Image (spheres, rainbow, N blue to C red):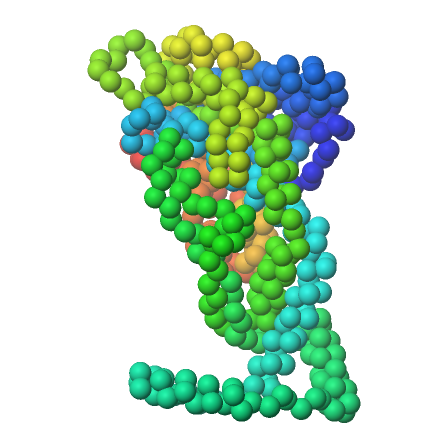
Length: 480
């Protein structure tokens, strides 16, 4: 789980330092997003009448693929637990045509925020929910053991069902109240509950199976044809219980799984759903981040002929969302005035000036990200917390293999990745994934045979596995 740091304790310099733990280079982009994030905190300290007048300065990142545009925005959101969604501009079509409209990205962001807040609230009540889950589980186990086991019978015919119902009605009329439990029976039952509870808490019965009833939401399908889009057809069944029927299905699970299922059920009962939604909408409106990728693909070059429902029309639809408007979601209206929009694109064929002037004006901060070279690749392989070499070492450790990379091996991998990028398509740091997969293919396949051994990858090993592929341009184009 990522470390959560309150935004008030994060200076721009500290934000950049946190981003440096995961992303190599790109100092200009890190500074821009750090300032934008800090400005949110500064705005919150202002008087209400002035606070609403200060809008976020949206950012346009310009740079080739694989240089860290998406990762910078994602890590920034994770740093302060801000709702974050990444969307591709090419997926949208102009309003009135088949396809997703631009409002859907705000609805997606709201859905993410609701899930985020719900999980946080459930974690807060988890200790109490676990206690209730244990009690529920003990009752379920005792009921299962005390219930007489009945042999599986054939399906009764309709006539038999009818006569059974008549017999039940007669029995209900003549039914006498059950005899109260004697003091001895009560003590015996309490003793059994304590015994089962101790077994559950010690984990002694975690692998046993039990049949439980699980509630499942049946989201009704409402046929609505409106500008809100097809994704709004589902209703929030927690807000409208009468319209959200719940079915109960029986499942056979382990005791450990049943405990977690019951804990989740009890936690959901304990949280205030309406409070969750209010807080989620407030987070979206005040701290939400929307990353709009491939913005260059909807930039018109002036050469298009005929209707193009995914270019200028989409840009014009984006204008009110980015500038600030109200979007209807199934949780209520959401204002976009203070959502931070980070647009990004490679701009190989188009230029930022090809965007319509109104959209250019709503993305005032321009940041150009630098292409990555061999030295950057070497740092990416070793410095970040989630460096690729560390990932492979941990994966191999699960097989009992102690994997080591020498410095000259790191240098050679970085050199090869840079060379392949230069000779074929430049896909930035993503080239390291393909190179490392090719390098580790044989070792990953034979890892169980190396259990308990130490494997050292040096320059000679890297050259042996990759040299032939790198020399052949056609092979490197299709394999790396």
